[in-house]
Image: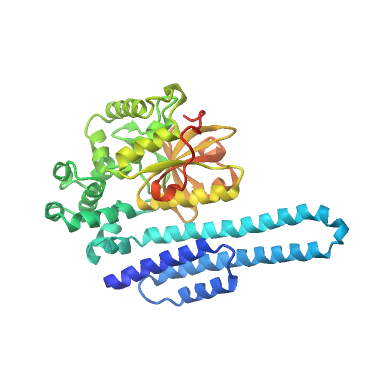
Length: 418
């Protein structure tokens, strides 16, 4: 395996996602030809390209059906006598909208599937950021299991490559690590910032895998289940701290030093103090009895995760808008950024945290129960989240800036949020 081959793998996959996203009304025959080319790929990552080919063929089939439906509607409209066409206009418009929505939704589905694949192509991301190939392969696969894509997200790998390239001190810390898994956790801390790295390295040196998993993260991302640390539940204990709890877990998942600060003490006490501090910090102007505003959530994440976050309202009556939001949420999760999302019914009511995804299902931390739950993609699109998350609709997301798009004004906050 060479650096050139690894980079070509990642860039070609990224290119095909861009082509499909930019042309949802494109040529199905051309897309099928692209799929056939990927099926013939026999270089590094051939299996990845075969999966991408299957997604392309699925997209092409939906697109062809939508185009046929559109053509049939136009033909039927032209066959109506001119004097009767006024009544047929509504049917034509509704049918065209449905056909376009189906094609666009299929493009988003393919983009999400390629997100799965690109997330697994972490080795190429590390190489592109400047890591040696062997080291990128070792770090990218550390602790990957189930919905957990590993210790390091794509943003962690990029930042770590940049920081290691210019720091002999950081490289020396890695060289003294006792295991590959320990090295991965140390690299994750490096990616999150420079403070306290030597102390962190000393605290985790020689620790077994179970100790690292218990102390350096607050949720297990490999499968659904109840979450606890050191005998205490990781959950929302107060009626208005679902957002606060999601923020604490999100920061701990980004920066293992923060998680270790909580788990090094008596966890129940430290976690309670963190909830009080975070709730106060995010609600300087917003009334605390109402929970946390999306703007406050975004501002706190920007301050503590080192990348600007914005909140974005989601029109839960528009499947297209929900689909776009879900696509961006999963891209952020692949980068290593857990994403708070706001769910509700008539009004926004409850924050949950998206922490992983795999083959059409999303792993979500639900703070009121203190559990991770698996939610199919389809449940988000259909507004069928009540059974898993307590409320039926996705209504807002809090994303890092490269996935956030255009924010609404700060004055348009969700007053019903918790």
